[in-house]
Length: 442
Image (cartoon, rainbow, N blue to C red; front, side, top):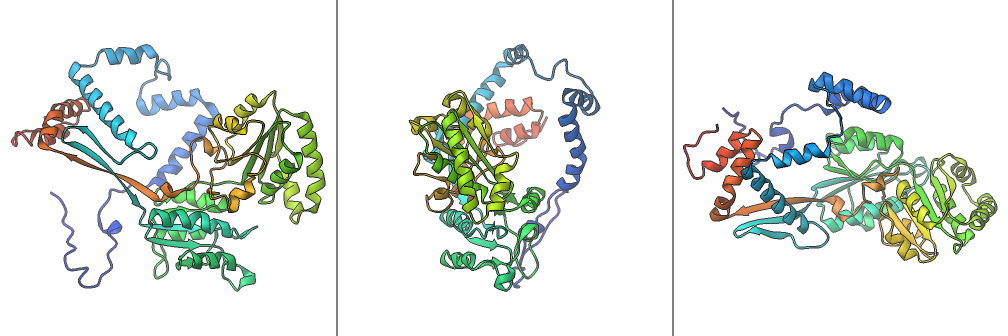
């Protein structure tokens, strides 16, 4: 019933085998499906519940009385569970929770969910990564460090790096980028930039670059678009947009520092966001005065002026720092500076930020280079659900399950009940056949 793929002798003959292509998979054209669902998603965004109603009738052939399921329906469903199924659910929940707790923080990687029933966690580095380092308005040599170091610490065995070729350097990437690659032991470096670099990593290029498993590193909007398009074929770290700084500050902050820090991020890009959140009229006025004084003396004055004048930049006045915290959490900035009295306490209330910088001596520029923290951070409000690039970004977690016969027998009936509830009888038969080999999937 199964097709046979014979690989015997092919390695001995010197043939290079790409097992990802050799081992069969079902056709699964996500790109085509994306174009099909795009108008549906846009319609929901435009028409809301009316669109949901139309598609529910069209695809599910039923229109719910309410899209939000009432709590009474949840309670009724739970009350009507068969006792055996409720017990199976409870066991599944309890064991999944116990294993999940080992994944939190730095707790150990092995848990016994019952006598003879072990689940072990293995953290395995991604086999091959492609690191992208921008070279447009600024040759971000620091991004080499931010990408390569955690990948090396994670134990990634194969690292490739791409950065745009530069006219002034004879078609090579910026010398600082190349120097850091050498210092960090990365010798597979490509003078390829933009979306084409992302495509090279994702698909591989014959006789040049092998396909990677993960692509990381910031870039312009075309790099971001390529990463979005190719996500699924490869994994990506994030879809990074223009850089952002938010400064949450009160009357204790120095407007000279605040203005300088806003300017430092505005220097990246005309679309960079510079936001001050404050309850102090004096600080707001002082910061405006300092911006007027400091901006004209900067090298990239035009770029900075565009950023500060853009709709993405502003001073946000709040009633008090408590409201400022709410604004900061809602904004979910890539970089958040806290320059307030008792900044540590304020920081403890922050739940959404890529990285937080406390007090007058921890500016974002420090984090960009030498703080030791990552500067590859979520932008565009994604800090509400995503983290900055770190060692775990380059690791995969694998569970290794080991049950003894007795431990298996103890839970077997619950698995069968669960499988029957999902109308997957062959799942249950895979349990029962270990005790009764002639069992049939009902």
